[in-house]
Image: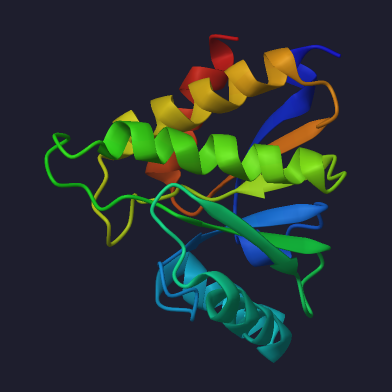
Length: 176
């Protein structure tokens, strides 16, 4: 299957996407917060929070770049993969590598759980201030490289909350 058939760009609300898994741009406590994280916890209900609390109880906080998985509660997806994106501090604190790790670790977790379709938000581009163009390039290229070496994931959706991100991802998609 061609990469153009496996990658989609859409503008909208990730909590409405009926993929096997949606990715949550979580904070390290996994307890919900603002932005995508808060929206997913609100729409998914208390089951997601309860499972996040179990994970934190077992392993402590989720480190930047790492990913964990829970059920999706009341969301149309089956799972939520929670990943902690880096806060942008000028690019000199491994932010680029850690953002790439968010995508790689989320995709690896998806493969491990038999997930064939996955939806990503624009990780770290909100309150974590990662430059949107750089974040889009990292996300797109990391996913593209992963899919070139793995055929089990058949659909990756980049769900953009705003027009600026959507335009950046569409421009990258056109280069495939």
